[in-house]
Amino acid sequence: MAEEIRRDLRMIGETSSNGGQFRHVRIVGESVLSSDVDCLKLHCTGELDINGDLKVGGLRLTGECEVKGNLDATKIGGRGEISILAGARLEEVKFTGNIDVKGDCEVGSYRGSGAFTVGGLLSAEILEITMYGPCNAKELGGGTLKIKRSRSAIFSNLIRSKHATVLNTELIEGDSIDIEHTVANVVRGNRVKVGAGCDIDRVEYRGTLQIHKSAIVREQIKL
Image (cartoon, rainbow, N blue to C red; front, side, top):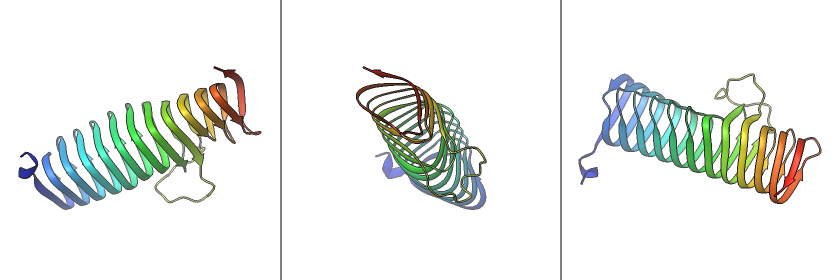
């Protein structure tokens, strides 16, 4: 019954509006929503600031989006920059660009290219990232974790950084781990592949371990 009374919201140009419950939200331009937003779909081309939490079924972004609270999303797609000032719970992410989460980020499937920063734990059943910029997380955990660096030296202006394209984290823990250009204190998993450019203090593995000739692993422990 609640979904039947949801209305659509369309904002064009430089606009602002209250938050609320909506069916479809479409943003073209620069917009501000002043409180929590709960919608089935959100399509933004431009810049969007939400002064509260965002709960959305499907988010499609071309541009920039800042959520000053928590983000709860079923699907995220597009390209640009997403900034979450609290935590995030996401089911499926296919995104090109920057994702910045100040707290923890829980995601079912995250496939993307670009860069990410997570202030707490980034947990994912499937994490497949091609890095075009520096990536940071306090900890990474999940099922299948695959981190690669782009072979291309050219990327769009979505990533504006002079820092090295490296993942920095304290701990990586998962079932299947395949990483390169990663700096970590501990990597712990079942099947572990440490690729080129890695600098790892300690690897703990239960099944198999592969180490690239250019990688640094100071300690190996078979569990």
